[in-house]
Image 1 (tube, one colour):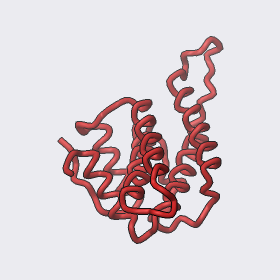
Image 2 (image 1 turned 45 degrees about the vertical axis):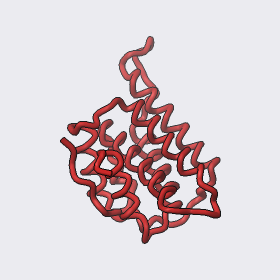
Image 3 (image 1 turned 90 degrees about the vertical axis):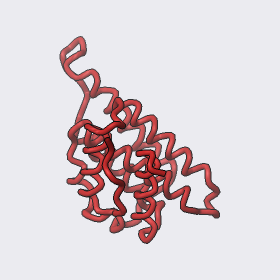
Length: 167
């Protein structure tokens, strides 16, 4: 069973959809696989020439955002504390690929540490959920800045339709 895709850029609605589809739906997978899928979607988005932006590029970025939100929901993080109520209201940030890679790498390291909580020699882990929340939120912000506000709800809906097999 899957939950119907939504045409929105409202944060809580997107997080709710992720919670239902990625935790209890037919699209359950590991956090690591979800992270790999999100990275692949960024790769797909970057594959389009920057002077030729189109709905497929926006869908790729939106899919990546949904996967990162799904990771936050699977790990019971509070991404809503770091994101605006409407993702269209993000202000422009340094959306360079270098900045994107920096925050993805930091988030990926925290996800790796998450697996090893209470399973280290010293009994301590470097896992810091607050830092992971900030890094995932920054990655989401950078990707949101690459999607025009007017096209964002449709991009999220298209991404969700593809993820659930509706399209």
